[in-house]
Length: 245
Picture 1 (cartoon, one colour):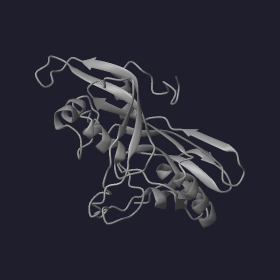
Picture 2 (cartoon, one colour):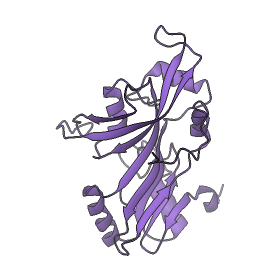
Picture 3 (cartoon, one colour):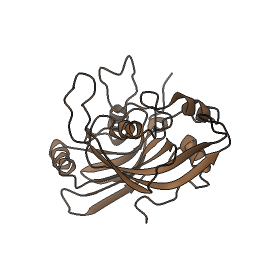
């Protein structure tokens, strides 16, 4: 059976001569690796076909994460963008849903993290969070008659392994849908609502173009399952605007 390449095309949020930002779907691996375990469908391969040219991924998103993904069309541009990322001159905003209500509307988690399996050395890791909305749902949790959730905007200042997910676990505000670091009871409650994905979405990406000096800003809409979660907060998927005050 032949698959139409158009059916595998990803939404393009920005494209020019040197680079592109696309909206990566949840559940799709970025590239082949030891973790692929027989997978044959990868973002990098799709984009090579879609753009008809070489692709150099500038950063990564976990398989379960959706949203803004930056790639370059040549090695020099990829290297220049990599330096921008390392200098923290890129704004990366995520939307996520966590269990519980954080005490503060704006808070920072500064907690060192290791590099994941086989990388035990801990390094500084900082994530800034802002509560966008709160919801109280009518199913029981931990001895209470209802369950509380918060929609957060997360802005990681460092890029450690699964940083947002692990920082939320450290704060006991587990990310919903996270099967590695989350809370299974709350994950099951959301699956009953038809939400079977991890609720982490790279909503916005902003940076200065390394060749033109232009400020590039891309925003990615959420998918249907994430939109279903937003409905709990009575928020349409296009709002609130990331970075809004």
